[in-house]
Length: 452
Image (cartoon, rainbow, N blue to C red; front, side, top):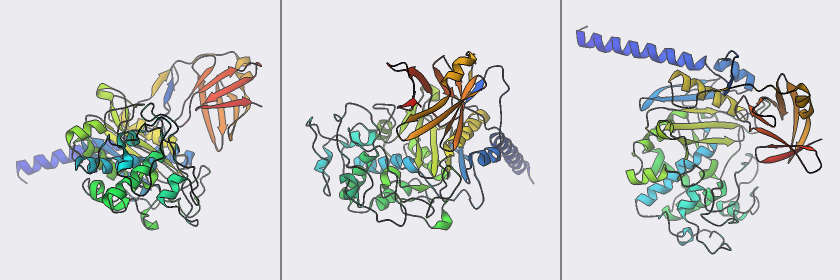
């Protein structure tokens, strides 16, 4: 072996060893989102948390130095090519499909969408303001229907027109404008259904075919599609109790909002292609990745600023939870996909492990200084609380609280006398107040819960 070949061999071996060490650091370094000052930090392995959260399958892709550095799958029968439902990560892929048509002059971001819609019209609104594609993609059109529950395989599927009109067999309400278009950010999967119809009306082909032509193929997403995959190629869905979802998974005819099947590696390729303007012209890429309202651009959510600015999206379908993100400079990021209703927690834990292993500028655990509250005050907050369609059982846990919700236990620590923050992912903060009658009420996640 000559010196050059030996040098390349030694360099490759060194990089491989470094990658192995960092992979091991991730796999053994899962942590809570909050560390308590003065207390030892807890670390878990992926296998430990997979069992704890009852998540049968996990797939991960890590981006470093502007490329996919490694990808691995965890669970019986899954590989890095196994497809998961991307849920709402379907939206940025759908948005770029529409933006490709904008780049070709077939659509305009700011013209009235109804001018190009043939199959159905967006109902006129009392403000007399037109709904535009820019508003649909950025959730600022004032349209209703936050998300979709999907359909079991044994039931009839509605057409796209039936979905937006709320007609049987659709299982959601009609998608209408009930807030002045352009006035606020309000997440609307319903708005993305008009995007799906718009793309089909303009291209004359099914949305799945248009997305393949304009995004999936150019981004080299060979393991992705909006059509239903073969059972052998997909990770089946599981509920919060660890039980399989009937039929393997729900079907989402609302493809733009929730219907993409893909892998972490393919989503990583998509993010990298967006970051380098390989899918869209540079100016249009910049528009897509610039927040309009609510930290949301044209199909993408943005967080942070400066070196810590990221873009991406999360996803939550029945039996699937996932997250895809990349720093705005295109250098570092990660995609984590799971096949469980409990996946949110482990997605956050794995992302933090990657952030620690690769020294990201954000997404690492934060340290919280414990506030000591009187025992009587904590005991007084404990009890059963009833909210809209949900009951919470709250008990004292040391100097904090433990909440039992559905099949999950979440620990909270006090940030003040009335506000408690969760130690783990996937739960909102708790704020306790008293109503006009002096009864304790709990506000969490936009809902109000009354003590029973």
